Length: 391
Length: 94
Image (cartoon, rainbow over all chains, first blue to last red; front, side, top):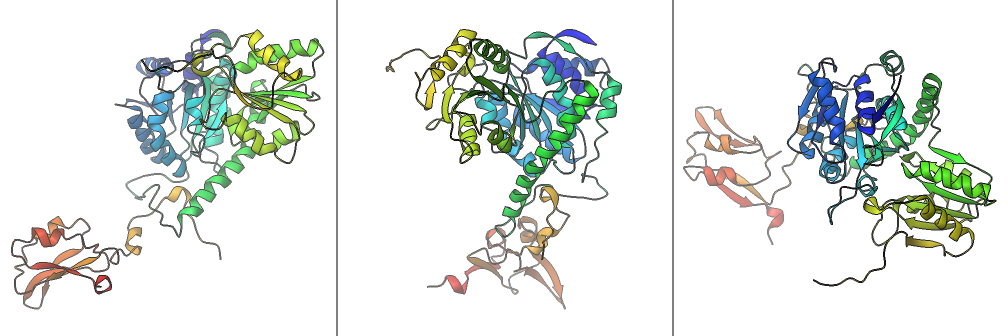
């Protein structure tokens, strides 16, 4: 059933259909309305026997979910920015404990200076936690990703937290027509969660125990192996989703115009606009294609090697910076295709803290690279010239 | 041979007994049986449950479990009868 809804609702409604046992969150802009919608559903008795717990902080919320997930519950939370990094200590633990927690991160910039607007700096800070990360392009993809996230995370070959990343404001606050899923369809796609091991008074267990040097490393190798298996499981789940929902969002990456000489690589909501820009430049005769990275962790190494093997120039648009180096997507992409592609890499940090990225701005970047006006390497685009002064 | 690795470092109870921590500390407690009255103050304060008042024949005094005692010295400092002394382990004597 198609309805015009906001991004918040598209997520909340999808979470409801996944029948979570415990929802726990702490409000933070621009996430709050997701859990407000869920709270309203809870108050209206629409969430079955789910528990809705309000926590005293994001650290508390994540900790409650670790306990609930260890007790065998299907759990959900949403957060972003300062909230996500406050959760970070707990989330690293959740990954090590192999708990299939599903969370939505409504991507927002990090302080300081304080910004409530959109970029990817928050989720990039969680890059190495052992959490799967998928970036969605629009609210329908966010809606569709929730049941898939549970199915991947809860797969016995995987058992890792799953973070669905959607751009704050650009998606969360946007009204879009979303084809809302039916309960019956989600029920047949997503079986009830059967935990591999769980806390009970009959069989006491301790999760995420102490590991001295003689055994710690093996647990981390196991996490890496789980991530590698997740790549396969994701493909199966994405494919099954395409069959049952009729919407095929692609694999780990999507590739428009594979025969091109120049490729633009991006993640998240900007991909929608980029697709339009690339189509127009293509019609002008420019040999340019578009790669949307959907799964950032596990990283689509083989897919990028294959897609970029004959590329001449690759433009990576990062929405965050690893200060002292460059954008994380660009760093990872270079590392992935090293030895497999001789393409020049043009790495640009754009749209930080909600800086607008209009069509002409994106088109100019691509044209300038095509015409040789840019040098390979790293640069910021879209900022004003300034001089730093002491007040 | 492949070792068994529990998913998510999930552990069953009492596994920590396998990890003997008695060699961690620099000092170890020595109980003076003559002074010890068996009052159990040390037993209540020991953070690692490794001092226990036992009946040995007709005597009753505190016995240290040196397999796990980390030598923190709490038992010695709380003892009302100054019956527990902390001594430096031989390997740390220069």
